[in-house]
Amino acid sequence: MRNFFFDTSALFKRYQIEKGTLKVNEIFNDNNAQFFISGMTIVEVISNLKRLYEIDRLTTKSQFLLQRSQFYKDIQEHNFSIVELYSEDIITADELISKRYMKPVDAIQSAIALNLPIQRLVFVCSDKGLCKIAESEGLIASPV
Picture (tube, rainbow, N blue to C red):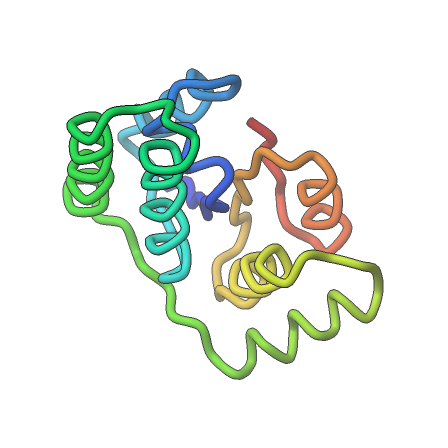
């Protein structure tokens, strides 16, 4: 079984077509895959979809509702494991930031992935810099 931890930036591409969407969909088509996201990712995805509708006006209300519905459907149908944030993750995020500047959310997402007791976890992300950091910390990065 292949194990994938999705950063919000990558998972978002599943619901809003942009560069990297095809690669994300290919991962979802892997019947031998287990998906992990942080609880924070749920809020981030919904917030970003809402931003496209209300702030950027790139989508309609019905598109937002459809995208949101598809996101929750994927969580259920693909049996996503939603990983909680623990104090250990905050400590790891602090250690990551101490080594180099990182956005707080990126440090937390990376820390959660690093602390999962899963060997050969693939960190799926659309930020090449974050992928590079993930690799330097021992994760397998899959830029999309």
